[in-house]
Length: 450
Image: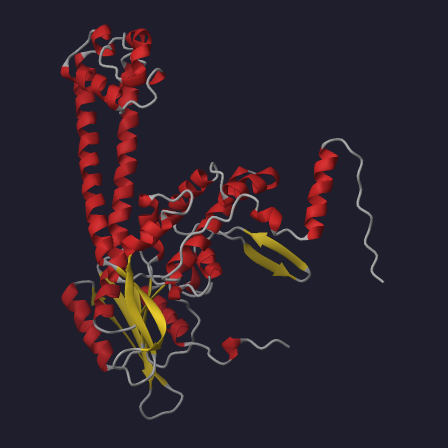
């Protein structure tokens, strides 16, 4: 019989508080041992307003009661004031997924009963904490997510510009690959300023578009009216405003990454520490980690910033790369029943992280590198989507090692790495498949074990 480590440490907590959070209030349940009767517990339930003073007063009360852990359910963004203020008060705060703390069927559904149920689960160690990064990483995450939203909005407004041109019978996007390039933007500004002569607009072409002036003049011939000019001016102004905001966010992100450092456990006792515990040093800034990640195929400076903002700079939260991959939902769930083992859906995961890794995987798949070879090897038998997920998983594993080790650097393995590390049986099967694909009749003899 296999013995589990959970049998020794069940994660139970003697003094616990749970908060069922709403928009304006929070229902608090406090459960602590009875002072005189062994085995009995005292339970108190009350309502707290979600204002700063009320939450600070709640923190003082919980500290006086010796509460060891405060557990709250992730409810929109309303959990943030409770979590941040109680954490600053010195309490250990756990944010738990609502899916993991569902009430049992058949019980009434009220805020009070939800708080009591959450407290009972927490004191018995039946909940797990979600990943909430420290304050500097949270600030970096706010900036990178806002920048991503602004870039998406800018793209949407660029598409609206093309729709306005199509409404006016202007087919500029059929000739110009980038409407907002040097030549395309000059023509758009001239249209918004009142220029209507197709030849005059075509003369604004620069670079390789100079050879396409006749096609440009034909594409710029339409029914562009004053209404379209006013609409185009508004849309161009919005695009320029968003571009300015994105540039400002780039500056703020760069400044914050230079100020944020990653903690590393050196393994020895810290300076002035008589307990002999491990020391923690801050030696690598987030900017240096981003430059390190930039060497990975498919990852650019902006993608590296997003990845660091989403997974943090301290990999002690994820003991192994597999923990990080599982948290990011880039591996299938194992479902086992009897003798049957199947793979279930991975889940949604962090959309900001998965979006950045998807773009990185798509870029790495087009390179002549280890990651590109991995994509081309998997896409033949698993398809495009699953091959991209596999490459994204590899990128995340590489990222874990580059962040976890302060001296790690990316080293390209080469496109033939898989072939060099295949076992002989796998190589033989691959060779047989290649010969069969060429029309040769080749079969493998069965292996007889004495």
